[in-house]
Image 1 (tube, rainbow, N blue to C red):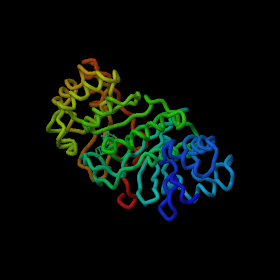
Image 2 (cartoon, helix red, strand yellow; image 1 turned 60 degrees about the horizontal axis):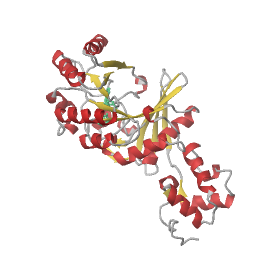
Image 3 (spheres, protein in one colour; image 1 turned 90 degrees about the horizontal axis):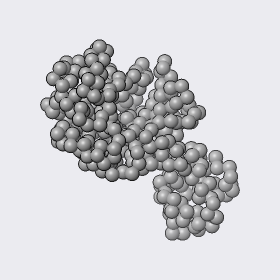
Image 4 (cartoon, protein in one colour; image 1 turned 180 degrees about the horizontal axis):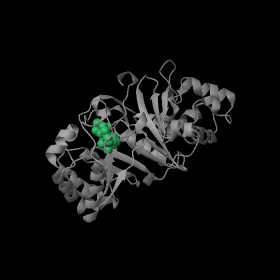
Length: 354
Ligand code: SAH
Ligand code: SF4
């Protein structure tokens, strides 16, 4: 069997069994002389039940379990640290087999559980207000690595995951294929079966990727980090997307709405004296008012060493009111887990750099 066409060769690093397509897994099992129903059994174990070892697969014959663990790996995520906030939020520092660390967050509300996952270890975009951005990019994650974060949090809470946001470390549109593949698996009935509308991807505004995303068939939710509708301010805050003008972003978002009929969210972290002035508020209203838009006003979370200060709660309330006056719905996002540095923009990829 060793030299069968569809099986990995001895001596090579084992592939995670979940990196195989359904067709590849079927062929590999056929090469092992297994009946077709084994494929479904294994898929159920890895995607729905979140098995982390072939030994967990109790309905497979023992010799097959042993053979599979010689040929393939499964998972390989280790929890390095876990912190629990007073509001119930849990932040995890997880390590992949190659030693890369990332953080992800679980946020329970009543019977709901939202999970915030990272799409990259670090981020290359360099936003001035973000802790992840300050450290640069280590590497992109693959789809299974993104999916595994959700499985890890689900296991730790022991409850169903009701929503997922790709708002942890990294820019998911700089890792498009893996992010989309992970979202599809989270959505799939043979995966976690989370409704597409409850899976949100957040981008700093990579125009070609937004255009591509408009053509995806699923009803995934799109969030765009705007943070300023004034070009000069946005350039200073978000140098990584300087080459995509606000005018261009405005146009592409119009196309997105026309094509999908879905309402995008704009994220706006209020920074005192920087993007909370009257001029900035006027520009934000103009950017949103004739478009389908929901604005999420975020209280700037503290990033150690940063020169930026959050605006007052009163100013945030004023933003919401003024947006409502021009017909734009806006909400203030309640920060979660700020006491354990688990809130937006506070995730880092290395414990040693804290
Ligand atoms: N790279 C993507 C997704 C990850 S960041 C993006 O930028 O959209 C998730 C959200 O946290 C983004 O809206 C980001 O702008 C915001 N954020 C970053 N630093 C923050 C901070 N210090 N306080 C509040 N929000 C922050
Ligand atoms: Fe990257 Fe998003 Fe942070 Fe900007 S805000 S540095 S895009 S993770």
